[in-house]
Image (cartoon, rainbow, N blue to C red):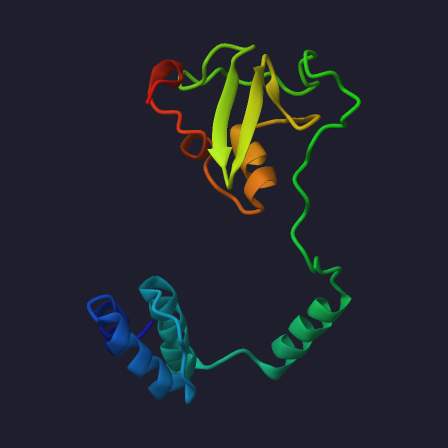
Length: 166
């Protein structure tokens, strides 16, 4: 990397998000709605380097298009891996033993949480968490099944310090 280019890229980290968006428009000739400074710095640094030292060759671009066309692309995220409902709630899940987290109460404890007008109950098993006829490998998996989006299970069930006490 050329000396001036290195200084120019280093200077990007000192710019505000608005300044980075202006620089993005200047280099890419299109606007961006992103305010993510890290993403903007990476994209701008890549563009500066491509302009200074040359972009991908046409052969490399064609190969990338071929690879993308032949790839089996996933169009949606995989579903949460819940264990079969046929497994009894009292039986531990057949999984790799996990180290016990000191934030969790003992197996057999039922966590209760009110969410969107419903009273939710999750039973802590020796190796997993039973909820609504399914056994999940983690509290986060249970929280995701409930909310539909990823969230921290300990925060969702309001478990704080050791033994589940906030």
